[in-house]
Length: 610
Ligand SMILES: Nc1nc2c(ncn2[C@@H]2O[C@H](COP(=O)(O)OP(=O)(O)OP(=O)(O)O)[C@@H](O)[C@H]2O)c(=O)[nH]1
Ligand SMILES: [Mg+2]
Image 1 (cartoon, rainbow, N blue to C red):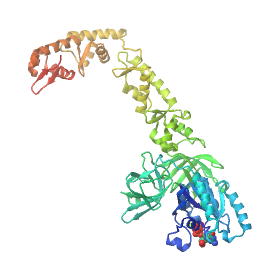
Image 2 (cartoon, protein in one colour; image 1 turned 60 degrees about the horizontal axis):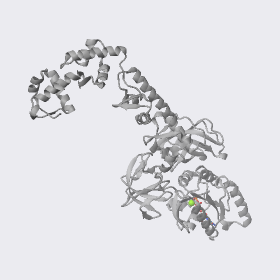
Image 3 (spheres, helix red, strand yellow; image 1 turned 45 degrees about the horizontal axis):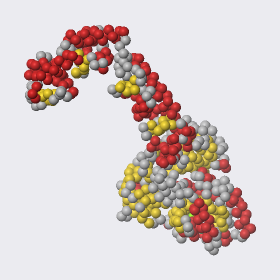
Image 4 (spheres, rainbow, N blue to C red; image 1 turned 60 degrees about the vertical axis):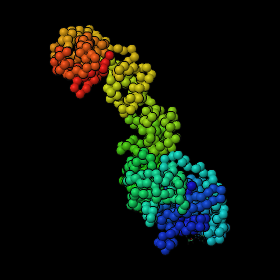
């Protein structure tokens, strides 16, 4: 669990962290010299009955609010610090707004420097703080402390322990993600990054990807609160030693992930909320700074309605960032520096011109919309944890929810049930049409049906399989047809078939090719020949040549007799015996090999059939 400080400059955040943990987190010479915090500070805080929390100490200076946001992202509890002698100041309010935008709702308020004020003053400041924090940290306890006298430190500890004990631990079966807040090189160890594990777990020797650059690295070691660990757990401050990357490859703002479905993205849909007292109206394509995870990038916020309350928007980022549905972000203007809005990512992988969704959709509604937008391509199931913002375990149950109206197809694609019904009807209609157009064929080849359906091949196959499984379609020799359908010869085709058969009859053991036959008859007879083959009247011996069955049979009988006793017959001996020219002989012998009458040896063939 992570505790993050917040509050105006000089109000005593770092001093209070030291009083609680014994660690001075202001380590930089410049911090010492100026007496202010510039970079994030980290310290472990051990609480009775709870265990160890990671503390992130943030700067209060107005110029370093971006650093404060990077520190406050991913925390579970806030420690808002207000100096009792000064009371609520501008960054008290700004940090409170940021906590609220980031969804950090729980915390404690410390009124520091208690030793500098009398009781009456303290009571006034307490009232002021209570009303300023009512929105962001509703119900937070207010504890007066003094780092000088030690007053209130134990009470603060007790309140922190109570709060920490009431938190639900993060799900460690979820996808691993760690937004990097620091990167450095340690002699002998190499590149080390630190951050709060937002979700999932990471073990030594695993391979991680670093987004947005998409480099990979091996986890050489994991440290938490200074100790070597087997794995980093969700909600913990962790230092990860990485083999295979330089420190320049992993700057603050990049993210460590493992699963393949994380991508860096530049287009997202989001619900955006303006800070109530920000006193600003967003222009329709306003260019702003967006802080998400530990990254801060320029972005355009495209929206129709941008006044008051919460509205839907598309965000176009100048640089790719790592997003998951449900992620909170903060929006700031750069001149003047001001926190003006924030929100929740509703779709991390929006298409360029994605339609805006209504605000406040639940996860099932959002998935239903993604599924409907994906149409015949479906939504890859594996992408749902990131796209919908649920754990892989919860993704299964989510897909099955009636409100989503979808089916898991082929174990990997989530497809609108309505669309599947339409595809099923289209497949039935396509089969009926194929039968009408090709009355002599046994049905439609699966490939023809598949390409005719407006859906990804896996989805089309699934639809066809469903039709077969339910008995509404049937498959015979790989051809798909209606259950009661069989090819038939109608009037003119019957005449044609008669002519084909009599031509082949009279050609005997040297039948014409399909093309020659079509020429003689004056019409393409390919379909008739295929039909006659299925009826057992003719046999296709080579690609372009069919034999009448009885003539082929007499040839085979003669061949068997010529090769009796297991003799190996040479091609010329066989030609002699059969009395056919070489043009016919070679394809005929290949046919005999293929169907298992003969075997080819070095100098001839032997009979192996019955
Ligand atoms: N008298 C008194 N002084 C305090 C107390 N807590 C902090 N101070 C003093 O207030 C000054 C600022 O304290 P810091 O802890 O550096 O304040 P901060 O909030 O961390 O400041 P930034 O990180 O720069 O925003 C220091 O000189 C502290 O000694 C307290 O309880 N009593
Ligand atoms: Mg400080």
